[in-house]
Length: 194
Image 1 (tube, one colour):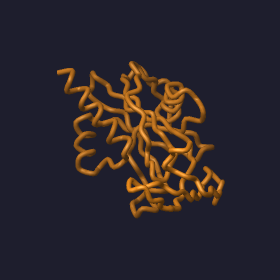
Image 2 (image 1 turned 180 degrees about the horizontal axis):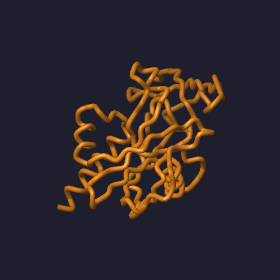
Image 3 (image 1 turned 90 degrees about the vertical axis):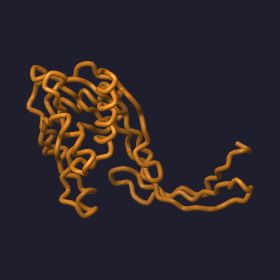
Image 4 (image 1 turned 180 degrees about the vertical axis):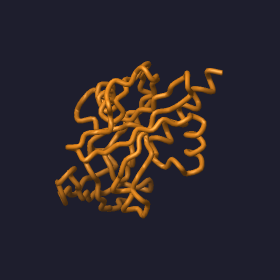
C-alpha cells in the first residue's frame, strides 16, 4: 500500500513455546511526515471468550476463582475471582463459551448473547475477547465443573449476590478486567429493565 503509514522492517520469533512471541521492528510515518522506527514485542496469542451469567430470581452471578501465574508474578497471591472464560481455539464464540461454562462451572446458559468484542491489551497482544451475558438458574447445573485437570485447572465455582459483586468490582475485591467489564454491562442492563 503506497499510502500505508506503517512499514514493517523485520519480524523475528523470540519464543514459540505456548504462543509465539515476536519482536517487530517497524517504521511509522508521523503526522508531520517524518518516519520514526520502533521495536516492540508482541504475543500472537489466541483470542478468547468470557461470560457473566445472572440469576434473575436470586439476583446472583456465577463467578470462578483460580490461580493465575501472571497475577502471582505481579506480586499478588495469584488467585483471581473472574467470569468463566477460555481460548477460542478456532471455534464459534458462542459454542466455545458454552463448552467453557460446562467445563468450569457445570452450568448451562439461558438467553446467551454476545454484547461486544474487544482487544484485551493491544500494545502487546493480538488477543480479542468476545464478551457474553446470559442467565442461569439452579436447575441449569448439569455437571460438576471445576475445570480440566489435564489442563492444570482447579477452579472453584462461586455464586455471589450481584450487588456484592458490583461493590467488589468498585473497591478492588474483583480485579479481573473482563469480569469488571461484564459486571458493568450487567449493571447497565439491569438499570434499563427498571
